[in-house]
Length: 581
Ligand code: CA
Image 1 (tube, protein in one colour):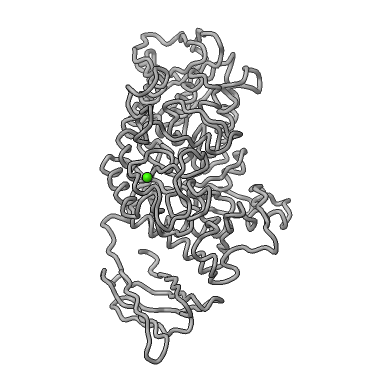
Image 2: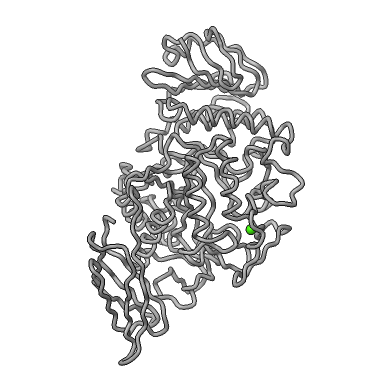
């Protein structure tokens, strides 16, 4: 590793007074740090590049004649590990709620030692989905046209209730046994790589679960952010960069708890900071990750998050990391993309962000009646702020995720709007993301609770009446949605001009939005008609994008257009033209 320092957290009763020693070629014990609790020691080792893989004993001498021996294994790195290529614009994300996709192993639904038992009839309970289930459906996801899987966290969440979502981690190094084992996850990643797919791990640095093993014996009071009485974050992330914001509001934002079951980690404790950074590097290395999605990105200390991102990217310069900066304004989101020219000099070192402003715009654009400031111009206006980003390709675009109303519900259950949404996501700049079940038009309302937007994928459980993993198990309308998405996703996966070409767009007029993705040789023209009537469009206005192209291949309807001087587009629909000469 570039960073040769290794911190070990040692937890055992009254270990703090132990004399520590180890002898292994290339490994040096640099420092032993005792903390407030007598039950911890933090060891700092230096691992020289000359150190060979192997196991060595660490001796903790606890008395004149007594000692504890811990055999520590130093593993060999895989060849090429540091050079891995993370997700990029050639990819398309498929987001999975790990508990709600496929239950391939019912024997792990209830596990000894894990408090919450499976209860599929409870929308907020555990339903039994697991890593083997996800692995068994990777070829389904690949066949749908997606290259990258982001699954919600699968680490141990041994909480009494509401533990299925995975964001209340109770052991940062251990897969929840109800999802499987660490080896199951490594196997899943390996299978994905064999299918030429990528895996993105969802990580949480802001908080842990209230039943984390260290909560009853904290290394130090400041291991977590503690208040005299329960203090919730104000969820107002603009306080982080707002130079008018009060220190009080900013403090509450960052040090307040996300929920009463989610103790807020104190990343300003340097031992905690190193613990979190090493944990990430361990998962990237051990599992062979292709990327990371960071939960609640603005909520931890921003300087820690910058150090974290830089430390990870220093080890894996081609990895990619996307942060969940859930803010409605591009100016606030762009603050967090690496090398942003921020007034306060802050550099996050975070390569990618989610395009939440576009998420909001998509939600209104296809539902509004067209006017000067309504309808498709909402999409245009978000893109007009792209100058705020340092990299407009490395941005993830989406119309829904596991925390929002379901995309098909946002589209008012109108398959025409769904198709426009899909066409837009897969042709606009950035990296498209869809949420499991979008392809079969799953509905769900946020105001009915998170269970409603995280329903089980039909066919993922052996006793399901319907199996939407196969075309014969889908309704006609579901197949129409599935096939439309599949056609465009697969086309995009081979179309570099759409993946990373430049964008040229025209102000929407009369409910028609036209844009081009182009490079020196190719051009793709996208037309969106938001009207309830078909339109004939004279294309002379778009000469700058059309250049000397005269014909087109209509990739949605799979036909050739011999003359593009006038384009006929049906009501509420999208056209995608590969321009030809
Ligand atoms: Ca299971």
